[in-house]
Length: 391
Ligand code: DI6
Ligand code: FE
Image (cartoon, rainbow, N blue to C red; front, side, top):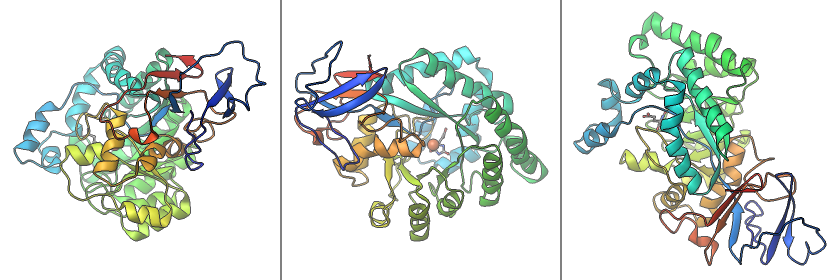
């Protein structure tokens, strides 16, 4: 059996999938594919097949951990208080600057393996723990190396505007940092083909709308599409700014308002929901899922795997949390980690659904019913195929 989300589910029973050169050439019932002459047939014994999962928002490459903050939060400190006290993103920056590319690759590989074991075949990885040009590029090099070594598609994003370095929080130093992102980091990442999009964090503890606009303008000038961490901790009207720049996605969105949702729908900007961060920060404000549905904004789900707010390594748990905490249906959760996640990466023509011309990235599940995806907490697929290859 094969499920093709987007159709809306497009379930085909007694299905067969024809694959050639790492791509799908046909999907249909076994009788429809009876004339398909295959060199090799792999029987899956009545299992369900979905597209390989797409984790469209991670900060998977970093050094060290921030397990201490977990304890601080339990003692009552907020994410903002931890950041202001020199913890948070800036503490991961120090560890990441000190690590070599090999170190970063080794530390990150374990996390990548965990996502892959959960059925992920495409992983977006953001920089953002460098905050200087050399380290941002080093992180992107590490992400690229993982994609070369492992049976997984890595989609690298430059997130230089993630946090302000401790010595550049105000005044001329702050302005110089934003200028460096625009004039140095973005052109270098674009020229080296090390990133396929540019992301930023629009928040009171991070970058203002005006600063994000400068970053987006530079991204556009360098031919890179944009995405935005928007309305995570407060409403900065980031979602409508993202929509103005035809962003691929706006992510988090707990504090999204109706105007933001309307603007996203009109621009085709995907809403990426990150229940792991909502959970780990013990937030109570949920993203307005009914509003997203009403406006017809496509919804994606991702792990947001990062050392601070979402140390989450399991895509099924992200789907389960999206259902349990945010009220998504199991179908919405599956579309959120397949077809809509692919859209958030600008890769819907390549991954996230099963059809002719798409990559033969498959997850094979030993389940009775599709609703079991996002029901089990931490289910792994029985098999996984990447570009037609078992593994
Ligand atoms: N929002 C998040 O949830 C992550 N980045 C961001 O802008 C957190 C990253 C971290 O705390 O290390
Ligand atoms: Fe994030």
